[in-house]
Length: 405
Image (cartoon, rainbow, N blue to C red; front, side, top):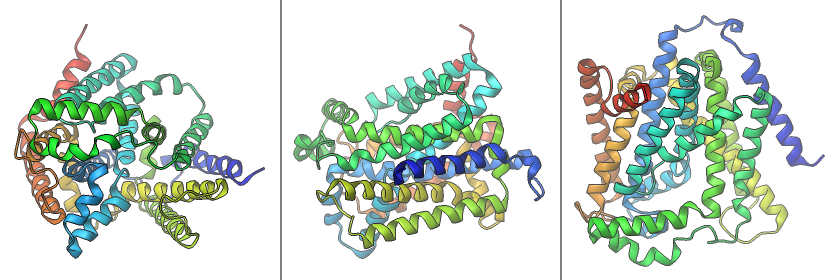
């Protein structure tokens, strides 16, 4: 048996043992209350939205094809570190976290409400995503996650081991994009020279036209399709953890420390191996080296996502920064409202029909402004939930989900 099949089989067995054998009744530590466990989900949602918003902010300000030119335009040391940190640790990493939580929430919704409301919820979220795609920006994930959640309906009938092996297989296959010739997956390259000017100076109609052109070219590229496999793997894993509320068994300090330690160890080890083997960069390599790079990259990516997912939970259950993280719980209860609000605001800040600041704002200023925005949103969330109990967009989704046809 080759090393890759061997890894798949044994990694699948490890996840299977974790998902199927751990239950709250088997833990030796005092179990946390149900309310605290549910609060931890809101904390995670709030924390993940902070990360997703930070990533979206950078992309709104500089598309993937422009990030290098943007980094060179602001050469200060702090600016350099911010852009490097974003590219290495955040770029494309928070969306799996979001997908994991989306899948976990889908499991809770399906078990508590049933198939029909779940189906309607998916279509409502998908419709909101399409509207955002048309009127705000091309990086919407709602329509993608909504469609993926519908795939959970037939897959939920598979056994737990079968779904675990499917998660591992999809995740590893998603890194096959390293075999693509450089630039094959980036179908937007012919448009890059004029996109900055269109986004910075164009009217709403011009920005809309270019946004749709880029979306249709990029969404069906090989790189994008491989990435969607990766996202779905994390969404399905989140569903498995949320199914039968298995996540409750993990809101324990020892469990959190274990997962956090594994994530850090895997990420650091993979980064070290990529460095010492000289596999960094996009150079053309033999098949064997590409396989090795894909494997190491998958390990680094998984460790990074686990770190982003578990770190806030670790700080929360240990009491370190607990007050700050609990302030994110109301923010997390209104994830949909704030996600749409942020993107709408970003579109007016950076596009030509608003302030037209695309590519003009230094990374330091960008993230300082974002920190202020999140602070305001957290305060608004606390005030709003005390008065109304539910976010406005969350209420819209609930209305259409529970409305009789």
